[in-house]
Length: 147
Image (cartoon, rainbow, N blue to C red; front, top):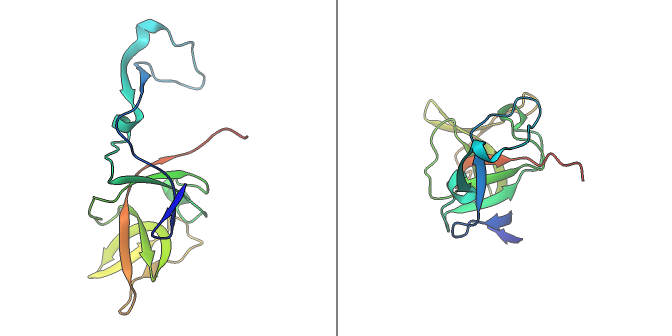
């Protein structure tokens, strides 16, 4: 674990790793025994998440401001720092030196960082504010294990 530009980076993207099985069936509410004849292909998580070292990093979310986007406290974000932020994308940024993950918006020429939770007000980037986009969120990953 390392701290880069004030963000707690959990891990980086590396050269393509081990391939994992991807099955052709979709799982309804249970998980049938994966039979070998359903094996569609093998893919790596690097390919699935489009990890492109050194442009991709992982960061853990803290707080509930993005829960409306399906991103919850403790989730991992896969962030592409080589992508240019476009309106409506979720970004990891620094606003006046403080790390923040929000939806990037432009309204009447003004940048607005919006939460996806009505309990949090939008943050308008004003004259004198310093905003640095650290990357565009491509994926979020959630642990469903209680341990």
